[in-house]
Length: 139
Length: 139
Image (cartoon, rainbow over all chains, first blue to last red; front, side, top):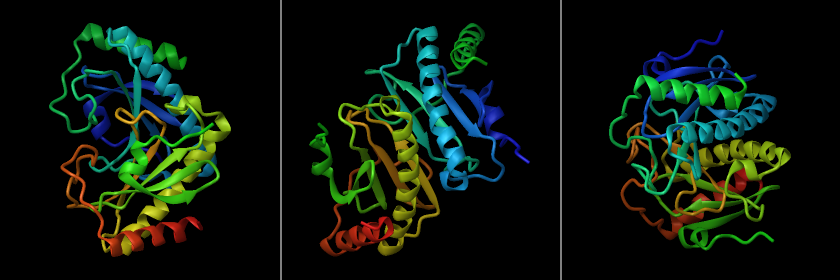
């Protein structure tokens, strides 16, 4: 039985569900940033997915990359590099970050994780970001 | 024609070649850390690989995870979490980091990228790390 770790609702908004992953918009207006959570109970590492699930995951990462670019366009910060990370040092449930980056963004060229403090979305930007992500992912 | 970006030989040691990826041991003795470089000319994002190449890549990431655990054991720092990252903000050629982490490691629980300064391997540790990686990957 898959249950979403409570850290995700506390820090992000639901975008919807792809075939394998639950998709969320990370609640940090500094970057267009999606999080994929494979709906596989107990998984904390890629090795806990089946080969078919891993193949599905990497395709959903590519879809999320396109959606991240769409979110960046909707927010007025066009993406010119994608960063993908599967860490889980603080939230153990397997999840993959897909983050849109550009030269001169607030953490460029370093990683975004642990960089400063998240900036909340205003209501209008959040709505535009979610709409762009859902349209790109056909959700 | 695939050519390895010169940043890799400057910062890492060759482990060998899997079906898709050239594998390197990152030259930082603080963590067991492998780097996979798909041998696909011009690729800088996952979307530049074919679906078959992406499927192969994710399987090689899992293999590299097991090898990273073996390197950690050989170096006396057993791994209890894997971190996987595809960033490329500084070195554009598509590559994937597979890093072994443990509670209390030098950057725990933050990301390793950009954390402090790399510590060079001594010759004996480098030899043990390379041998463990190659044995695990059957190279």
